[in-house]
Amino acid sequence: MQVIDRNELKIYKQDFYKRIKSGKIFIYPTDTIYGLGCDATNAEAVKKIREIKERTKSPFSVIAPSKKWIKENCEITKKRALWKLPGKYTIIFKLKNKNAVAKEVNPGMNSLGVRIPKHWASKLAKETNLPIITTSVNKQGEEYLKVINDIPLEIKGHIDFAIDEGPIEGSPSTLINTTTNEVIKR
Image (cartoon, rainbow, N blue to C red; front, side, top):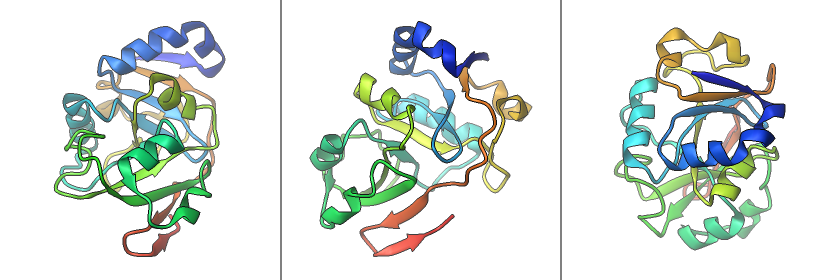
């Protein structure tokens, strides 16, 4: 696993975008916690993240490339929900374009959780024009990653690269489900 300091990312940006588009698995910082990601349209890459996390059924969320992408691919019945973005929110919308992400992202579901972090990491999705899986770096039910050096060995061996921004003392995003009107602070 290659670890890149966030400040070096500018130098290698195009190389990393190519790696993301080719299906690589990576760790990146967000405005909340470190995320485990890949191209959400790449079924094989999404399957790898499911294996890493030992998470077979529950859906993943994505960092959307833009609000325009969200409007094109999701049914926006509560327009005010989009006002929360960018920010520390994951908003669940009914999915209107089933091909917007690989079916492995949200198996058997007709909804999708989307984020646009208020953080430079949003550029990963925007500049590649791809939705990026965003899930915590941990196995199901374990503590999430706050420092790159603490990546568990059983996860580390499956990661192609990680972007280190130093310690992150956040907590997972607040979940707003527009299909059920639930708000879950995590």
